[in-house]
Length: 230
Ligand SMILES: Nc1ncnc2c1ncn2[C@@H]1O[C@H](COP(=O)(O)OP(=O)(O)O)[C@@H](O)[C@H]1O
Ligand SMILES: [Mg+2]
Image (cartoon, rainbow, N blue to C red; front, side, top):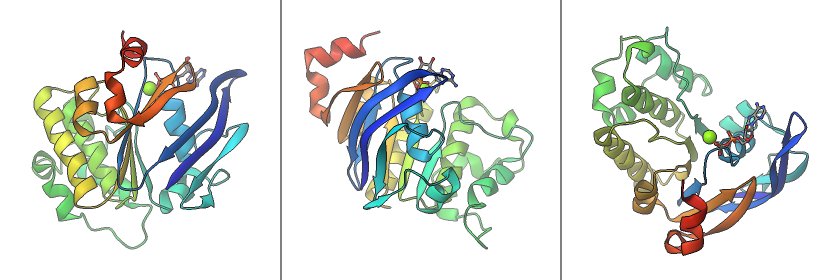
């Protein structure tokens, strides 16, 4: 469904991603793993159009989207939950959710189905985004992305700095949108057990290159454990 072919990216003259090849399968959960600074966030940002690769291209359902702007990719169904969440602190929860909808025309209704996945948000619609806890903000960021009814949900370290009870909610939501909504999921994650629980496919990134990719069971390889060891 999403084919990343030979992508190379430079940021201020240093090469950050080198000849990345990756295939994201429809309806699957693909987890991108790797230590800090290896290029995981840059890879997601390249997929959604925040970086222009100097080599390679990205095909989505057979269409070359490499030249499309981020909002055009969003219209095609790619939704992004950034690392650090990027909630608008001075907007209310409800207003933050509406920013996710602005990509769709004439559709300013909050989807009760999405809200029902996050009961805590429904109780906090008029609170400021900045007053929410980290875990509540992460739920808000995911809800905001889901309101676009994406075909591909792309998340950058959704469990980072989040307490276990909220991680459980996030895991259940991700599995729900995969199983019930048939949404394709791509997530960067360093939390090993979380990946082992939910991933179908994994891609290991090391110093800007794909070290290895395959079914989740490759995480058991000793080489891969070494690459991921902090
Ligand atoms: N805006 C930027 N300017 C310069 N270097 C950057 C920028 N963004 C990322 N980098 C560098 O690119 C590399 C990969 O970063 P990143 O994709 O954020 O890694 P990860 O998400 O795997 O921790 C790092 O060495 C980082 O310092
Ligand atoms: Mg990152």
